[in-house]
Length: 248
Image 1: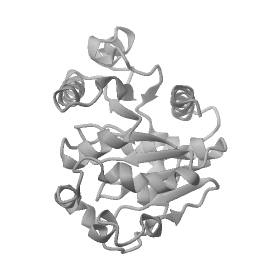
Image 2 (image 1 turned 60 degrees about the vertical axis):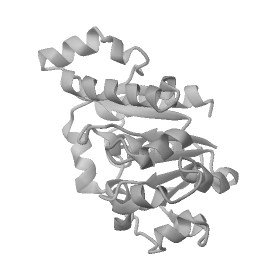
Image 3 (image 1 turned 120 degrees about the vertical axis):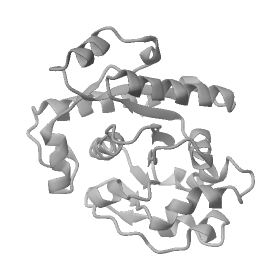
């Protein structure tokens, strides 16, 4: 099973939309997929109509409750969900009490390897002990980046953190998100990518009203958008790049 995290130090950059659409597209392409919503806001869970199982998180972390009890079905074939629980707001504190300190999430994901080919982690925006667990568990960390200098600075901060904390920074793979080509700065940064985007994926997710309608429909884009919609095509390109990198 391959594990992919959607992570960014900044919020509001399209992280959850990417997680939801990638999970759907993977499942629709016959890749058994598990989406784990680690953000206490629970946006990914809400899109997929997921309800938390109300198992005590600390019992799961310490092995007293099987992690499989957290899994719920989604409305779509090949796609399961571990919905967010509001107790996840304390997850960073709880993980610090688990030994070894960075390996709890990797250990919890291990039993799913027999049932799923891909696990996608939708992560809260932070650099924390939870983030350390995510970085230790993920084969790739996808970072959506708005084409602005402030967003690029946040990407560089994450890369520096990975290097300083002993993680492999080459696993961090950014892609442009919420890109508005009507804006000169966005166009310039897309066409002449700065060094921070040297390992960036080619897909560029546009700033589009169709993405916002995911909230209205509570569904991934492919479930309702026209097949030629530019944003949907961009997510499809992102999925194909991810599939090729992970050899799924």
